[in-house]
Image (cartoon, rainbow, N blue to C red; front, top):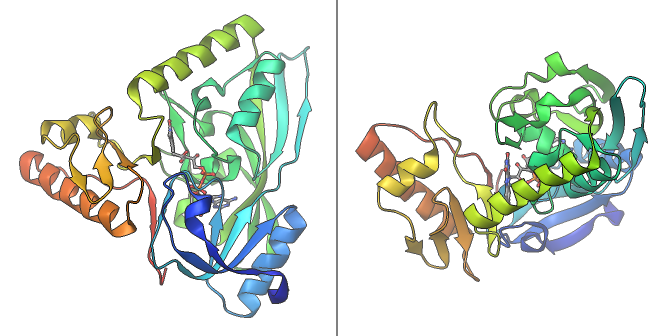
Length: 298
Ligand SMILES: Cc1cc2nc3c(=O)[nH]c(=O)nc-3n(C[C@H](O)[C@H](O)[C@H](O)COP(=O)(O)OP(=O)(O)OC[C@H]3O[C@@H](n4cnc5c(N)ncnc54)[C@H](O)[C@@H]3O)c2cc1C
C-alpha cells in the first residue's frame, strides 16, 4: 500500500491557516475501509501518522511532517427522519463537513447544529475529537455513539456518549490517540425551518461581526480559562494587532491569529509564546492552547 501513498504533499494546502511544509507521505481515505487499511499499514511499517480532518484547528511546521498524514474524506451520511418522536438520528462518517450537516439540518427543519454555521472546512471527526462548540453548546450535546478504530488492538469499537469523556474542549480522543473516529450517530430535534434559519442567520451574523472571517486562521488559539474569555485577557495585555512576520493577533478578535499572507509556523509560535508570557505576567493565568501544534518530529 505504501506505493499508493502520495509523497511530499504540501500541508499548507490542507489547513485553514495556510501554513505547513511537506508531509513525507500523504493519503486521502475515501472510505472507512481505506482508512483502516492505511492505519494498519502505518502501524506495520512503524510510520508515525497524523489524522487530518478539515485542518481548521492545526498548525503544521514549515518543515512538514516526517510520517504519514491521513486525510479523512469519508463523506457518507444517512438521515432517519422520525417525525413521530420529534427526534432524528443521523449517521455520518468522520469526513462529513459540518457545513453540509448544517445544510441538512435546515432542509429537514432539525435543530442542534446551528452553532456550527460558518466554521470553514471542519469535519465531524475533528469536531468530535475536540468537542468543538460555541454559544454554550457543543457537539457532545448531540452525539449518541461514536464508531472508532482502535490502533492499539486493530479493532473497531462503538463508544457511547459517556465513554467519550466529553468536557470543555476535552474528549477521550485527545487523551487516547489510538482511537480514530470512523463515524458517529448524532441526534437532532425537530423544529421549524423558520426557527432553524433564524438561528443560522444569527450565528453567521455574529461570526461575521466578531471573527476575522476574511483571513486564514485556525479559529481560537487558546482555550478559555474558567470564568473569563482568553480574548479579553489578551486584549487587556494590549496585544490586539501585534505582528510577528506575517502572523498577527487579529484586531477583530484577540484570540485569533491570522495569516496575512506568508506567515511561517515559527511566526505563529513566537506570537503564541509571547501571548502566553504576557497573560501570565499581567494576570498570573496560564492560558492553554486550543489548536494542535505539530512539530516536524511529532
Ligand atoms: C474561522 C474558524 C472558526 C472556528 N470556530 C470554532 C468554534 O466556534 N468553536 C470551536 O470549537 N472551534 C472552532 N474552530 C476550530 C475548528 O474548526 C474545530 O475545532 C473543528 O471542529 C476541527 O475540525 P477539523 O475537521 O478541521 O479538524 P482538524 O483541524 O483537521 O483536526 C483537529 C484534531 O482532530 C484530530 N482528528 C481529526 N479527525 C479525526 C478523526 N476522524 N479521528 C480522530 N482524530 C481526528 C486531528 O488529528 C487533530 O488533532 C474554528 C476554526 C476556524 C478556522
